Length: 198
Ligand code: GDP
Image (cartoon, rainbow, N blue to C red; front, side, top):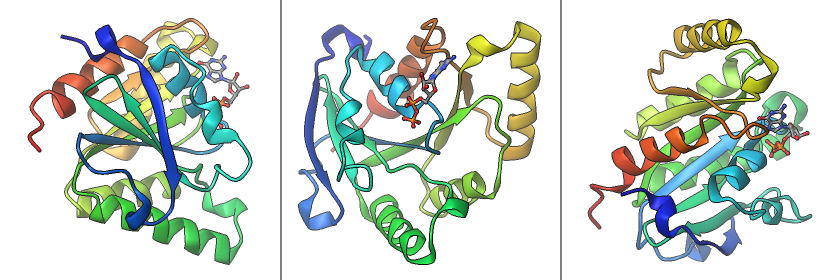
């Protein structure tokens, strides 16, 4: 069974603090990426909707945005990262919000890290992934914009990022050509959602 068979998407709310999160009554998958990585396009392609525009409305870009996907799971769209371009205070508040969420949320089952296929694995990605490992939760990487490369180049980029990150589950997608998106959904559903017990 694929989640998409009954996949209506519903925006629940946006929040910063645990007291404001929706009830943790289904598995949650966090989605992170630098700005421009293609995260919104990926969420829209996966859900066959324009739902990710909610996350881009002013005031919501620095919050955790909660969306129910069908009846089985929930996405939590996290604000774009990339510490280099942020001021010290901004970086600190981002970090404490993300770390609190990732470490304290009981129904969080995994992190999807969305990256432009042409970007290299960097210390921001490394920091986020290490943090997930310290809280004992899995990570997959989704490389976007594969339509810009040849099949050979895609494999090369994928291998390079696999090597740099030491992450096995790396997927490549194009939201323009709609390639690879279903495979990511299938992985998430089969590995993180299906066997989940409240
Ligand atoms: P976000 O900031 O991570 O949410 O990124 P967006 O989803 O807004 O995408 C950033 C830019 O990359 C936009 O101009 C998109 O049209 C473009 N983009 C996103 N995904 C793809 C893709 O798969 N292929 C191509 N060619 N462009 C993409």
